[in-house]
Amino acid sequence: MIKIKWGFYIFLLPVILWLFLLIVLPQIDLFINSFRVVNDFKDTTTWGFGNYKSFFSDSVYWYTFVKTAIYSIITTILTFLLTFPVAFFITKVVSNKYSGFLALLLLMPFWVGELVSVYGWMILLRESGVINYFLLDIGVIHKPLHLLYNNASMLIGLVYMSMLFMIVPIMSSLEGLDDSLIEAASDLGASKFTIITKIVIPYAAPGITSGSIIVFMLVLGDYLTPDLLGGKNSLWFTEQIYNEFIASFNWNQGSAFGFLLLALSSFIIWIALKVTKQSLEKAVS
Amino acid sequence: MIRTLPSSKSYKIGYSIFIAIFYLFLFAPLIVTCVLAFNNSNFPALPWKGFTLDWFFANTSQRVGVFQDSGLLRSIYISFVTGLYVSIFSLIVGTMGAFLFVQEKFKFKEPLYFLALTPLVIPGVILGISLLLSSTIAGNYLDDHFSINLSFLGPSFWLVVLGQFSFITTFVVLVVSARLKKFDHTLEEAALNLGGNRFDVIRLITLPYLKPALIGSFIVSFLMSFGNFNTTLFLVGSDTTLPIDLYSRIRDGSTPVLNAVSFLLIFVTSLLAVFNLIYSNSKNNK
Image 1 (cartoon, rainbow over the protein chains, first blue to last red):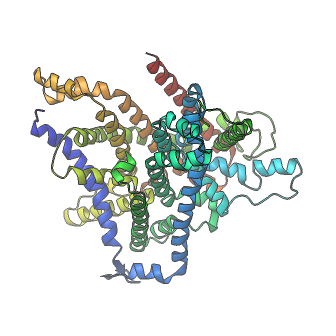
Image 2 (image 1 turned 90 degrees about the horizontal axis):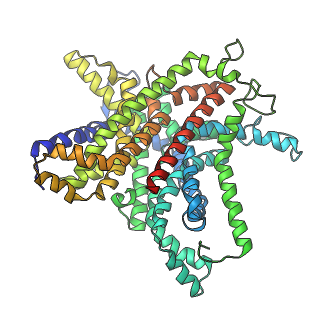
Image 3 (image 1 turned 180 degrees about the vertical axis):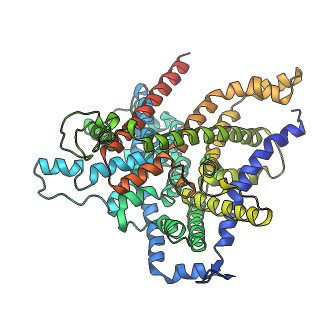
């Protein structure tokens, strides 16, 4: 192919500016700032691990950090368990006439946005909410249940907002699965369980990996759902970051927290890629 | 278990019930939100007290509808304009990126592509705080050394646009490259042989081929920008976007006007979805 060099640079320049000014430079600034320690009078600046030390010395920070990581992993697993049968249903079971429509419906929560979905869950779950109203009405309970502002309601919201990002990659890898493989296994006497674990899941593994990575990252870095559905006790790490940045105006401490969160997400994703023998490039495309 | 294989009746029924419950789970919050937008009550809760359009049109001391609430209308407008800027910029830069990564060969292409994917694995909150941090540092530096005061480097409309652009562009790169990879290069080569220059070829041959991917990623970029919360939260100045505005209203105690806004959002996006379905069906039938 004939190449005109200046044309190439016109394409390259905006991409370089985007990546270096908006992605690389901010992360470097975050990293550098996390080592900046300002004394109580805000007049001298020293460099060191002070911000990280306060993270390790205060157990609330620690607890929040670990809780966020564990709940993000739980959310990812729950999302997979819930959406995998649906993905299989849409791509392999239901007649082709309806599969497009069913797949389109899945997009709705994403299209209307996270905030509207979270608000809908609040209306359903709170004490004066719709679920409590129906339960009281039919006489199952006599006092409203505390359904909102706990870890369970937070998990519901997180799974709800993540489903799409899990199901789409799984569906696109299942679409490539040749039905005759399943037919052959079934003819040879394999049980449904064997077919699922030996054929379908290994085939969909790339889709499952990329779905899990995206879901994990979205959940770990989410602020809105834990804050509104988890309430005061949600203790999500992004809330600590928000507090340092916006409430306490301690940007250096916030940077250290931000960098720790970034390190955590990179580390867990790296482990997941190593275990499943995938690469980031392959997983996301 | 699949279309061509017979299964026991109980298995089929059990599976169908699971799917039905899943879709109920999917739509329950959206349907409830919509229905309660029309309830004649001052709280977004049951019991049903009759149908009303107050939360859309009323302007009384107790009830202010969406279309009378200048604050809400303004944040809808801000979100709309933000979405337009973000999707236009992301589309342009993302498409350029897709061309580079699919069609060109150059040094450092692999690391650059890896870098272009990293916004997918950087949490939205981190993107927000890191951009806030470095734009503030840059702003202070320019102010101290050159006495240039650029207000968009503090929390502001343009900082929100930049922050959303920084990760939405990655999605455009992925969607457009996926289609570009399937493109038949001999078409471009033929046009180049016939004397077209690179830009003419892109404009007349490659872009028309990419049109469905471009339209699709424009719509998705717009919606991602319109609904974004986690990154925007840290960058927003006095021009609050709709999600930020709704968030602070929910925290202050919700009224059905929030249901009315949600209804409008759900309604408009459903229309878009139906439009999209008809459009893609008519294309498949051709």
